[in-house]
Length: 575
Image (cartoon, rainbow, N blue to C red; front, side, top):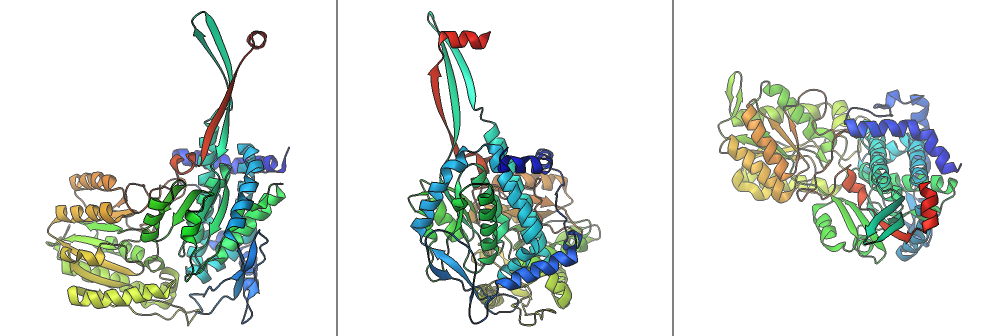
């Protein structure tokens, strides 16, 4: 038995549980959901912190050990949002053509392995990431993307691993649906024709995977798994601000793949800088067969238009909407909205941005609550989360980029002249990192005539309370914006079942995943692996979904050969 097959057998129980979860869409994960539940948590967290700190350099940058083809120098200019100081890490920078050549050469033997062998290797990657690198990655995500410790552990750690396994489940399902051999018989006139047919799964080639700045692992790991499980190679292109999480990931993939006896150049890393990007070069390289892109709407749309003949899988962003028509418990609804609006300072592709409210107010058991009053109470709920530094550090965390702060300032000034500033943004002092880049949310109240202000994703802690004519107008405005500008998630509060039914139909047609009347401890935009589909592919927010069969099935093709069976052979087989 090969090492890869042995790993498959070792991980089979976990993989089978994941297969069941993907069918039943229930709540399941093999990983502890909080850092304190991790085995030997204090020691593991200390070891992870030490591993992270070992990467850091001072004035003299420390070289990250990653042996891959075509190295021509080093790059790296990451700055921690918590300390606002450079990480001082120099990563190997490789010639793009050398990476494509090496990746192409690595595919042949990998694609000849069985589906189970490939799944076995990749399940071992998941195990190594979890067992040996989870808290190292948690620190790396914190100090590049700016997430809080708990979110980096959960959202960029164990939940991202769940999404990786989920992609493997669907890759396995898609490939196992193709029988390798068949005997075909048919009568043609007086002749009986018997053919033996052989079907081969053929990978498309080299995939380029773009990792985004705010959640690098959450989207990249499933994309990498989908391509590798179907026999392809992957070149990872991290965002220049968040290289470390993906550099650690690439190194783990390469080490496990090599230990299984395959060419580690199945996974490599291509770097660039903000000043000299290489994204378009990678997308339009003649050897690019697949592109996975997560990031800005503008570049995502360019990828969709220009990737051909490569396949393109995109997830960008959009105007995530809320329609607040009526509520049994308005304060509970506003608390849930406030918490979700503050999560990671709304630097999430699922954060609510545009809140549509009828001009007449929101219906409650105690009567109508005026729109201005709803806006004021929502702003108070948001402000309360940023008022206590310890709570703000856990929920708001930090701002990943100075560009986000500049956008907040710009929209604050524009909003003040064209609407009402419900909540002024301000920095808060992080209790553990006094130099951290922070900002509490900006909230603006405007009318539908200010659509140019809110009719696009405003990345960061920015939201709009939008006055609409009535409930029907609120729903129409919201779903129109989703269809035109894109939207991944949507939220509805209503006690009217007929209105809820209309909203479910309207949002389904617009292509946003809808959450109805949810209150309580769970963040409204939490997406559960094995259960929640992430992105529909039906609007400009992206053309691919995590995770379904469509996300993996076209990453390989089917070729066949057929030959006639001699009469004696056919008789022997029949007997």
